[in-house]
Amino acid sequence: MKFTIIAAVGKNGALGKDNKLLWHLPDDLKRFKKLTMDQTVIMGRKTFESLPFVLPHREHIVLSRSFKTEDPKVYVAHTVEDVLEVAQNVGKVNFVIGGGEVYKLFLPFSDRIELTKVDASPEADTFFPEIDSAEWQVVNYQKHAADEKHAHGFSFITYTRK
Image (cartoon, rainbow, N blue to C red; front, side, top):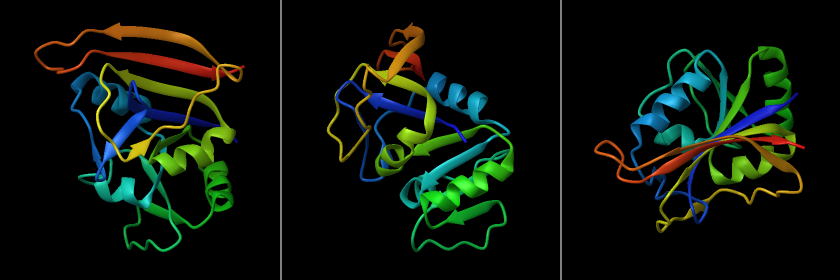
């Protein structure tokens, strides 16, 4: 079972602060939606609670020791092993969408990273794990300048495990 990690990070590895994203990048949101549509998204409780709603056309797995929900569209897994078992039966691409600790847990099980690298180094309390260049290689890189819709420039970077 392999996973794809998807995240938007600052130059300093920043992911978020106070359980909120640090920027609004419409092109990044469109890319996230396109890549994860009709797939499975795996996240921690805080990430799930930060969503404005259950993401349409996606299966949700929330990794949490204590979280409970009555929503039939959301599966709660209490351990990484539970996630692995559920994800294996889903038969779709499994995207890990956060937060910082969940990224660390699933990095060893992942074979792809879809990263949006934002040209900013904001203050944060949640960070993305370091990508080891001995284990990962860049296979796609697209640079985007700041514009009227995007306060920061950013790059879409796809990594695959060597």
